[in-house]
Image (tube, rainbow, N blue to C red):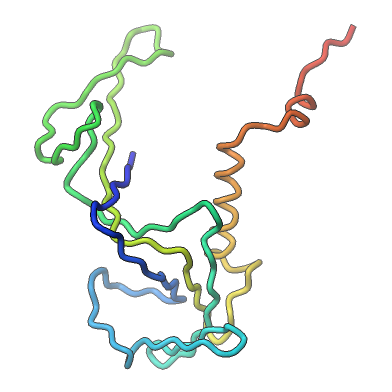
Amino acid sequence: MLTVKSKQRASITCIPNVLPCRIDHNGPVNASERYWAPTKDCNGRETSYFRGRKLQGRSVKIPEGYRGTVVGTTEHQLSDNGNMDRVSDVTSKDVRLSEDDKEGDEMEAQDTKVLEENASFDEIVVWGHEAVPETESDPYIRGLDEWIAFAETMHSYPSRKLAKSHEHKEVG
């Protein structure tokens, strides 16, 4: 399991960019406007060039009530009592009994690793080759909409109308 710890100081805001390419580098880059300088035309369409290729972008707002975060890993994990310990300091694992197991076999508790918030965002830009990504076909845009809709459905209570339609009636 994972948990996110907010930083004490004010969070940095950013706009993540989803590029239509694979970059085999993970870390800081000395980027300058020479290499990345997106422009926005009067219609709100974003255009940029990356390694000589024309890209067109679509801004996607994070829905109301949600917040995007950029997180990084830490050396900590959350113990059952809510305290954070360094991963190297944890030598024994808690043991819990399974309620469903009548034999009394022991189950190992899951570790809860701590991630730290590095930045937050309220929109992302999804880029496409030579054309603006389509809302209906782009996997990142669709994924954002579909996962949020799925999460809302999963964490909501059924309406009374829906609950009544699922009640079982005895036939006599």
